[in-house]
Amino acid sequence: MNALYTAEALSTGHGREGRVSTSDGTLDIAMTPPRELGGSGEGTNPEQLFAAGFAACFHSALHLVARNRKISVQDSTVGGRVKLGSTGDGGFALAVELEVVIPGLPHEQARELADAAHLVCPYSNATRGNIDVTVHVSDD
Image 1 (spheres, rainbow, N blue to C red):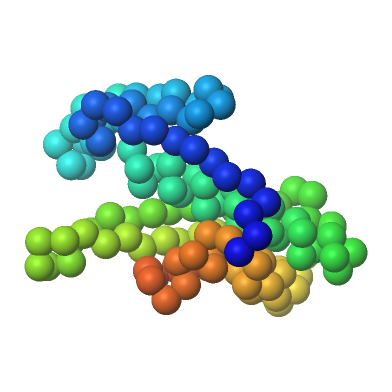
Image 2: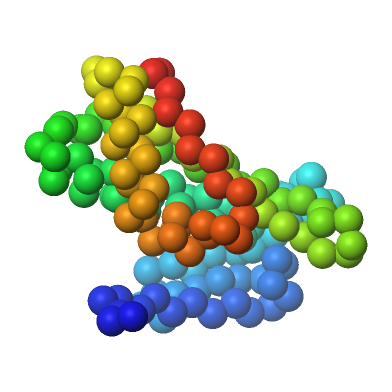
């Protein structure tokens, strides 16, 4: 792979109960487990960061695909939901749901754009075959 960009982040403290910061200083946040996992929920957690990153990256891929096809997706949104679960053998696994909304576009055309974005999005390519990723296309 020819790297176009490299992001660097550092976790300090105790992982889910610590801090995460990027080498350029643009991100420096407290990490805490969510209430559902016995934490205070007063900071963010890896699943929220993954959901945000995947949603933003997928949305960018959607805009790229649409631009190449000369289709406007100006008011589109992509929501990300990351689920953390037990594998049953002491390990943990993730699953992702993305919800794509493109107002004013026929559902079938929106579905085609979402499917094309799923083929070019780096997060989609990184997770394909590793975790369950479901892309929903909604009309609202």
